[in-house]
Image (cartoon, rainbow over all chains, first blue to last red; front, side):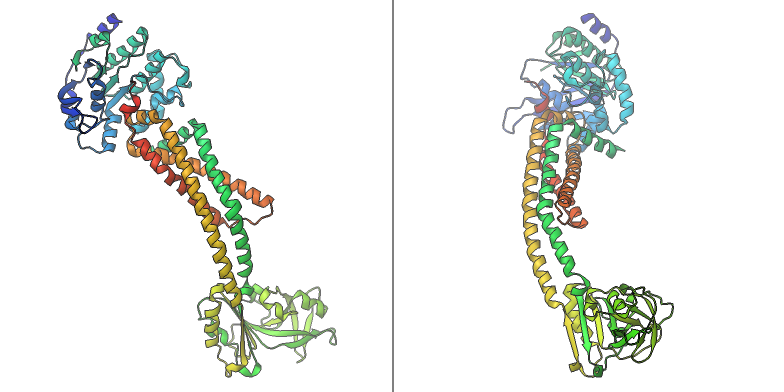
Amino acid sequence: MNEQLEAAAADHNPSRVLLEAQDLTFAYRANAHPILEGWSAKFLSGTTTALTGPSGRGKSTLLYLLGLMLRPAAGDILVDGRATTGLRDVQNAQIRAGYFGFVFQDAALDPSRTVLDNVTESSLYRGTDRKKAAVRARDLLERFNVGVPPARRPGQVSGGQAQRIALCRALIHEPQILLADEPTGNLDPESSAVVVEGMISHSRTGAAVVIVTHSPEVAAACDREIRL
Amino acid sequence: MRSLAILREAIVTARSQPVASALTILMITGMVLAVMLTTGRTVGAEQQVLGSLDDLGTRSIVIRAESSAGVTSSVLDRIAVVDGIEWAAAFTSAVDATNTLVLDGTKVATRYAYGSHLDILGIPASSPDPGHLAYASSGALERLGLPDVAGSITLTTGTQYGVGGQLTTPDFLAPFEPLVLIPQPTSAPVDDAVNVVIVIADSPELVAPVSDAVLSVIGADDPTKVTVQTSEALAELRGIIQGQLGAFSRGLVVILLAVTGALVAIILFGLVMMRRKDFGRRRALGASRRLIVGLLLLQTGALGLVGTGLGVAASSLALVASSDPLPSTSFILALSTLTLVTALLAAVAPAVAASRREPIRELRVP
């Protein structure tokens, strides 16, 4: 896996700041000790960043803050230079649908819908043509060698296949920012390699990729590592 | 375009949750069935009773004037300006008539009729020979020996009239059976003495005020020779029946709607709790809270439509099978609308709860 990841990481061309955290402070309760306090970082296009550190340090919390799914108590998240603090929910949702792709720890597929429906789901939130999305979805499923008929339901696929499907879902609209929360946590080495490779390859198209991980191999494959 | 995509998503989501969707449809169908088979049946019966009471006879005002009262056919011009009147006509006193071919045959009372809407009696709006044709009820034709509705009659005054057709005798003219009428042309100004004026009010409630208004314009030389017969008592009875049945029906409907609304809300809350991860994922992938609420409301609306349709169809079949009267279309439409609104209102709280699922709570694996 290392060789493949190193090869994928060999060529990158960082340029503009796509995602920026400015003095982020966050606590789950008003009087609780903040999980993050005055935290800042910039995430550049074409760069893969690994967020690492012991459990409980707020890696996932930071990822969900960066993905505009949590609101910071203080500080701001800038997406492509645009401040997001104070935006209404519908505006945040539009930014999420327009800029972000997500890979969750356990794939989080909808078991009641087909693989194809799962991959194309975000086209509904983006307001884009589902038929075009379906064409690209089939390409992605083939590219990542998912090996599952698009009409099948996710309940009948393995964990590795599910996470590949989740990666296809995240990449369906070629997001400029890809966030992943321990995407290889439950995967076998082969599936891990496919998933991480896919994310790094995507960063080479000019996207900023942020991966929360406990895996030293994954962290090593990234362009940089931020320890919390 | 996006609205269609959202509607499609709501329907597909509903189909992908067959148990919850079936339960929701079942609740709504059950509610519509319960209302239709109880209140609907009552309302159907009520409407049938009220329909009978609302018949022309119930709204009629019959004014009888002695010949010396001085009431003339011009009264119709004055009545025409009174509001709340559906129909009016005036009739002269009766003159006996016999079949021209059987002059010593059975005599039948014949009246000259005035009015511009005699067509409701079966008299053509435009007569081929105005003022010279008589129209007789089936009873009168039988007595005259004119079963083929052809021939002529001769009044005791010696005047002959051809038989133009058969009358349809409405309830309010039943006391004048067997009936023969000779409609008089409305084009020429006439001021003949009349003995009977019949006025039909627009509604039973208007019988009393219309009766007063008509009396005020009757133009009798001697009002003591004028008597009025109305169905005011029946109108009051109608009000009592409507009030009692209405109150009972409304109470039952409110209870059934409340119970169904609560059940739908419980089912949807259960659905939201079971599918927390689903809503968390949707939020993470870019669904706004508004979209989540809209999706659940559309989903409930679609299920509500199916449930209401099934309920209306099943209950209508049951009512027809048991020979019970069906409630009116407006009742069914109102019930369907109310059911949908109840289901949607019941879905608001679960939908808002779903839209507030935080992705980090639902998607993180401990």
